[in-house]
Image (cartoon, rainbow, N blue to C red; front, side):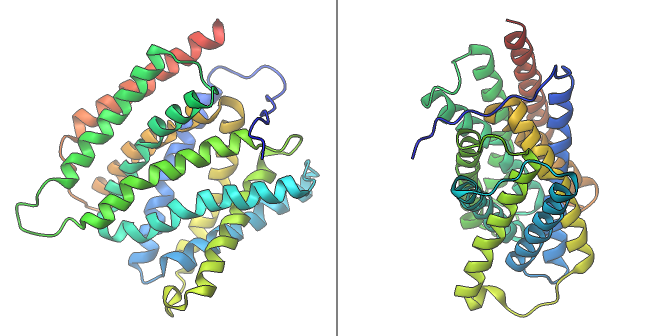
Length: 309
C-alpha cells in the first residue's frame, strides 16, 4: 500500500486569516462535541450507541449535501479503504473517549486533545512530510508543556482519598497517538478529485460501521437504555459542521497544522467544564493555558514565515 498520495491544494488564493479561523472554529466545535457526549451519557444514554447514531446521521446529512450540490463523489476501492481506515482511526479514540469521560471528567478528556500535535509532528518528520523547523518544534513543545501541566494536576494524589480512575486516565492519555495516526493517514491517502465534505461523510460512515459492528458482536456493550434524542440532535448537528471544517482545514494546511485544534479544544473544553458544568479547575490552569496559547501563536508565526518564503 503506497502512502505517497498528495492532497490537492484548494484552488485560488487563500486568505491568510482563513486557516487560523478554521483552527479556532474546529477546536471550539470539538470541545463542544465532548461536552454534548458527556451530557448524553449523564442523562442515561449509552456512549457507544450514541456515537454510532451521531456518526451515521451526520454521514447521511453530509451525503445529502453532496448529492444536492453535485459535488465530486465517485466511489471506488480507494474511497472505501479511506472511509473504513479513517473511520476506524476516528472511531477508536472517540469510542474510548466517550466511555472515559464519565471517569475522568470533561475537562481532562478535552485536555488530552492537546497531545496529538507532538505525535503528529514526530510522525510527519519521520515520513518527510515536514521539514524540521526550530520555531515550529518550540511551538509544539510549548503546547505539550501546557497540556502536561494540566495532566500532572489530574494525576496528582487526591488529598480527599478519592480515586483518580488511573486506568481511564492512562487510556485517555494514550488516545492522542491514535488521533495522530489518523491525522497522517487522512493526508497521505487522500483520494484525489473528491470533495472534503464527501470524505468527511465517508469517515463518519466508516466510524458508524465499526462501532455498530462492535455493538453487534458485544451484546453487553449495548445495554438497553433510552437514546437522549435532544443531545443526539445536537451532536449530529455539531458533527455535520465540525468534520466538514475539519477536512477543509486538513486539505488547506496539512496534518501538523490541523493537530493544533487539540490545543484549542483543550483550553475551551476546560473552560466549559469549569464555567458551565461546575468541574473543579485543574491545577496550574492559568500557566498551562498561557503556554498553549503561546505555542499556537508561535506556530502561526512560523506558518506565515514559511508561506512567505
